[in-house]
Each structure stands twice: as structure tokens, then as C-alpha cells.
Image 1 (cartoon, rainbow, N blue to C red):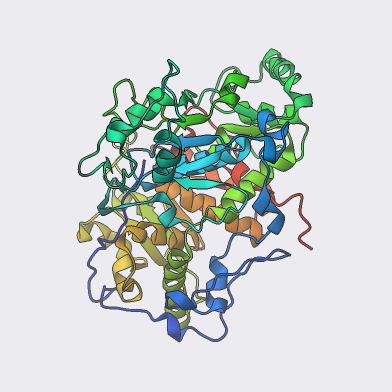
Image 2 (image 1 turned 60 degrees about the vertical axis):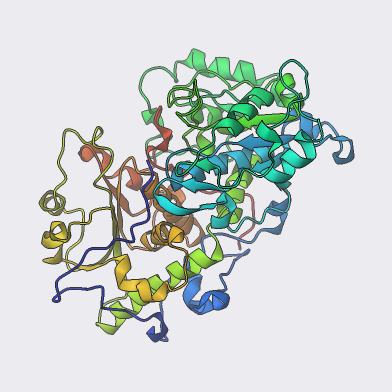
Length: 534
């Protein structure tokens, strides 16, 4: 589940924070005691081209590292590794954006990048499209990211169709040259959830390319030649142990993470989490010129949520036999698939302003954060009604704290009880810091602000909240915050019942089958293990 940007803030009483109160990041104290990352390979964020803040103020936003060797991560598929670069024909991976909101699309984009990198394929970026709850112009997915992977070959869909399809280099299942509908190469603005949504492009791709018909109930394994022959026996050994039968989570790993450099059998055992098969990536599939990763689009016959929709984090599907490859790929996503600097800097201005206002008022400069999604997931929350009074009674928020709130709730009176105990800020308090910023960026900016809260409360089942927690996990590692060695973070969830509340404060392995419901510590815990940070 994805949520639109939360630009619609709540009007507060004059006795509290109002939209007319405009904290100024430029007035931050000279002594600004907030954490930067530690160790070697420190990265930086330069915001001068985007209207500030200073490099010193922006430093706390940086969770990624600058590790030059990771830029050229080699493919690890058998077909890729067994031939020299000059002898390899160019092969492609195409993918369809999810038809839900931005964070679901982000999950698909991350998975496509990881698969293309691992397979040694050229990644074809989908045409510009409209995104659910981001009304307006069609956008390219790369517009949102600081996408700087020098070791990954990337082409636009227009170029791919011009150079391959119109040149007669693509074939249908009968071996006949296949051309795109109307011989069109530029599909920008013709697909998406708003407007025309011409489904013919994806129908043609599904008929022309080799389809990755994987589902979340299998695991994709990338291994060396030597390991390929033993992996089936390793899998069978795990299944014989009976470890993968029964519940959705193996409680053996609760608070007990498998070391990132553990033997392959131990790492695979934890990741399988009830699954008993490996996704098919046969030699025939490896030889295919174009592999297509379908998405969820109910407008295309035969495609529904129970079929080809791979709505899950990349690390819940993809397994690397070599532990070094596993954590390096996770770093690749952390360091090179991060939000664009313009988005990071806009969030830095808000965070700096929040801290400056708190310091000015004699407080310690910290704040808490809350993402409250009220208009979705009703089927999951059928047994509970999370009123403002109930949230307060359960003490999700600490009293007498400044709280940054991102929400789809537009009724200002709903937050009345919160104002008796906390000082609330919404995005409207900072619109003066967002002049000229694309409104499509607002939700992403809020995720980054929420991630800097001292304590965070999110909404379970929201991929918006989930990514906030992954960013918080990244921060915990690079800044070595409390609990970082176990992958735990200072976050809680409002969920269907009380069992969801503290799941981020204890290490949990993956839980099947709804891997998308939140993010998991395996994506950030100890992923710098093989580099010297001293």
C-alpha cells in the first residue's frame, strides 16, 4: 500500500503550531549537535544548488556511503560470469511499474535494478507515466533518484524500441520479427493510472520477451558454477530438517540474526521462511535476449494481484550464494538508489528548521515523528478503531514532545486531543522552504523528515511507513545508533492489534507471505561488514 504526498496539512489553533508559523533553517544555532555517520567512506550532501542548508546542517541526512569499488559490481549469473565482456551479446531486462502508488513502484524499480545487475543485463527504463495519487504530468521513475550506477548499463524504452524492435531484432514465440504497436517507439505519457493508459505496450512485451513468471513463494538464487550443483541438496537438507514447515516466521531467529557472513546453508535457511522452492532461472531463460518483469495491471487480461505481482522488497526474493555479493547488493541499493539530492536537501531544510525552533525554545532540538494513514487498509483494521483518544491511551507518543506529522487525515479536529500533550508540525508549516519544488516530491520529502525523528510511529501495511523505517535502519548503521548491531531501531507501529507495536525493536526474520507489509532488518543490519570503516 502506497500513500500520496501529505501536502494537505491540518489547520491548528493559534495557541498551537499554525501554518503561519515558519521556522527558519537559516537561524539554526551554531552549535548543532546532531549525528553524522562515522568511519571511512563518508558521503556528503551539498545543498547549495538547491537553496540550502549548509553542508554541515545537511550532514545528518546522509545515510549512504561513498564506496568506489561498489560502483562496478559485476553480474553474478552463470551465463554472465562464464564469458568475457567483449564476447557477451547485449541482453535486456524490461519491467512494468506497479499500478498502485509511488512506493510500490519504488519496490519494483529496486528489484529490477538488482536483477539486471545480477544477470548482467541492460536495464530498460519504462516510459514516462502518471502515478497513482500524484496527479499531473507523466514522470520517469529515475526523476526521483540519485541514480548513479556506473557499472549498470541503462537505456530508455524509446532507445530500446528504436535500436532493437524497429531493427527487426526482437521475435515473437513463433520466431517471427515482432514490432511494437503502431511501430511506436515513444510511449511517454501514454501509460499510467491517469489519462489514456494504453495497455498495448505491455501486452506486446509479454508476448515478445521471456516472461519472469516468478511469485513471492520462491527464492531467486544467484550462485557460482561450483555452488550450482550443491544448492538443490542444500535446499533439500533444510526441508528435511523441517525448519520450513508451519508458521510464517521461524521464531528461532527472533532476536537472533544469522551473521551476514554465515555459511550459505544458514543464510538460506533463514531467508526461505516457509518457502520450499527456488525460482526457475534456467539456461534457456539466461540465453533469452529480453527478459520481462510484469507488474500488476488489472487492465491486462490474466494479470491480477494473485498472479505476477512481485510486491516485495528485493532482498526477500533474491539470494546470493556468496555473502559478499549479498551485502554488496544491499549497499548498492542504499548508496545508489537513494532519493535525489534536491529531495534530500528540501527535507534537510525542514529538519534543520524543526531543530532550530526547538533549540530556540530551550528544548534539546530533537523531535518525534508520526505517519498516520487513516483512509486505507480498512479490511486489515476491521477489528480495531484507532481514534486519536485510543492512540493517546496506548501511549504511542511521548508527552511534551514536538511531533512532525504526515497524514492523509484532513479533519483538523481529529488531532485536537494530541495538541493537549504535544507540539505538532505539518508540511504546511514549511511551505516557504519548498518554493519551486515539484509537488510530486512532497511525499518523499516527508519520508526523509520522518526518518530523522528521535522516535517514529508508522502505520502497518503502508509501504510509505515501511520505507521510512528502512531509511531509519540505514541511519542506525552508518551512525551506529543504539541497537544497530542487532538491526533494531526506535520505531513502533500502529497495527491491527498490539502484537505489531514493537516489531522494529527486536530483530525479526522475514515473515511470509506478505513481505511488503514492512521492511526487515536483514536489509540494513551489518551490510558494511566486509569494508574497513576504521
